[in-house]
Length: 348
Image (cartoon, helix red, strand yellow):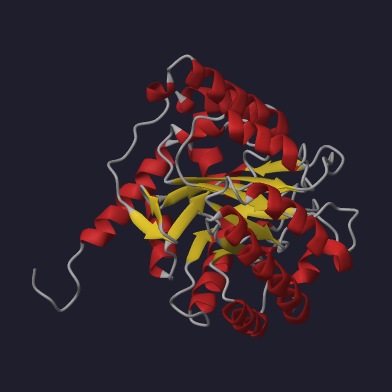
């Protein structure tokens, strides 16, 4: 079904096609036609944070910013969904056009700017959904909130999503909100995470459930920055890390007509950079802090590469746009085959 629809979607403006595809997916779900879209894999369970993930392949944040399509996306066979990014107040995001396909590179550049209806609208959509799988909610600050008050925005969102989220992602790495990545500096990160961890413990006592907090980091970090970040993340005892967000590097797509568009680059050209950050960060974090690998996964082999680099789970987004739901199954089955391989040097 997606193979049939894809050529028509690719003729449209990228953002319009994105919205139309999600609306169509939800319509088919309501009609009970989702089996025509995707064949689900057999379970390949992963346990993290006392959560049971039916398989290790999830949907990255950004596709369903407001949680309007949770049920339809959940029916495709993902092991988990991450919705958002959401902010305390609604915001329109950056002026259009703000999403560009680089088809021959299997890439997308976006500068959406956290366009969303606000955290309360997202929560209303979550409450209406019937999905009972693992649901991550990605939070950040409004663009007009100065960094010195960023914690107030993160806390506002955290307090509201804490009771319903399976885990909460703290997004400090989007390149499309001015100054947001400054929160990744060691001092700023230490201060923010200390405050959020205190809030997490208070909310856990209040709701009698502990919702994990994970941090999403950028791919545009030097080795030294990664090492410093690893120290801060370990000291804060965060529950996990997502590596990585989109990149501002344009070298892999140099010469493309859209290469100079502002925004974050995702897709195939991101794979090497994001996997390098994942691998280096893994070597500077204790084993108790799992990493979710995202960035450039367009095949089962790519998903296995993330696992090999140290990821406990993987997420897809741009690859899902280009390949459709079949990519979920291919990634799950590739990881299954890797798991079933005998350990080198040992007989079965």
